[in-house]
View 1 (cartoon, rainbow, N blue to C red):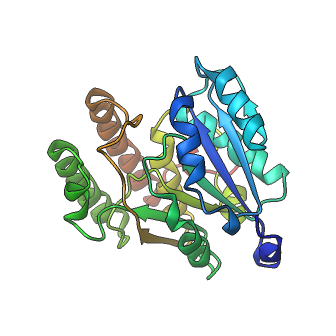
View 2 (spheres, one colour):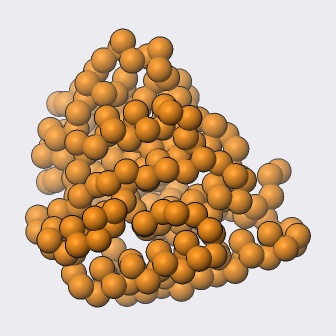
Length: 251
């Protein structure tokens, strides 16, 4: 890990795991570790957490686990741990390796240009997700959801439902995480909060491998998530109209 980049702000990768110990080593091997000043593994109390811990020890990566909290709870936990280690930038890395980690240097370069939040978008090249094996129903749902999101949030992003992100220290310290979801909805809530508080958000292209084994949420869970995002957009509109909404209120 390149300590010379410390002057640009310490970047720590947060590898999030949940029942994916059999995929972890391959995912780890593809991370451009020279771009980071630290890596941690945060496990959401998987059934295989002891195996994940053993792999982490063999790789020399600090390992943390906790009671099961869901995706959002695990990510908040990881962000907190990374901040305690002095991170200025935190890279969300999924332990199944589905999102291509080779874009980490590009994402870090982008956020160091003064952005608070950088998202990896699969849809900058609109046909690429289909070439990479994304199921058609997921593709159509993503396109429609992102269109609605752009319309209401008024931001020129091609995707708002991605699993690759880089968070700045400023974003983590600014957003009111208290009361946010412990599940996957957290990923969308953070984007909407960032827009509400006028933080700088950018995106870079990323590819995602749907042909290898991965741990995506089911179609049923995705449908529930979609309806939940509409509710968050409704709360965003109310907050913009002057109503006090806890999701957009700093304590």
